[in-house]
Image 1 (cartoon, rainbow, N blue to C red):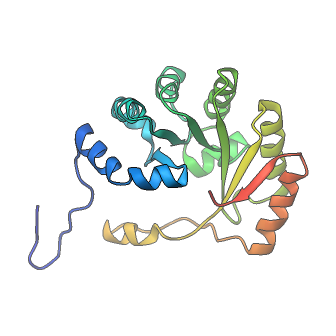
Image 2 (image 1 turned 135 degrees about the horizontal axis):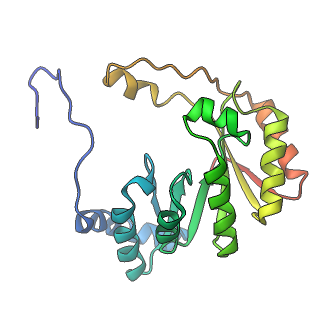
Length: 209
């Protein structure tokens, strides 16, 4: 459906070829050059469309563009390795350090995720851990201390805290689906407290990122 006169249906998303993606990327080259930024491959989960992600990354690198990957790390190691070999930086999500809790809230345990992170460290991959802060789910001190200990163990020096927001709620409404997430946005005082907690382990901590 290209268009619906009554707007009862709306087309979301667009199928694009690698060359079309690169054409869009090139539009902002001057911005990348002046800011020191680059291209971030995100999702969804980029590892689901890993072959396309690898192809885009290779083309970006041919053009001397910095390439980052945002990922949950939940994929077979062989796939993770192939994708991360083509990028300069990995932004790696750690949603919950307790595997049972991780499975409860995401549907999958975290052992593969943590092992893939350690594998990337062994390959000397430049990596930042990112923690989405979901109030009532993963903002307890025990979980954040576990994140900090894991980062120290892995040798990852930087952690980004991403306070939860409800921006995705409108997307659920468009799909006529209930928004069932029970998390809440943590208040600023708690976020600062958790930032200090992780920082006490000698890690660089940023809010957002």
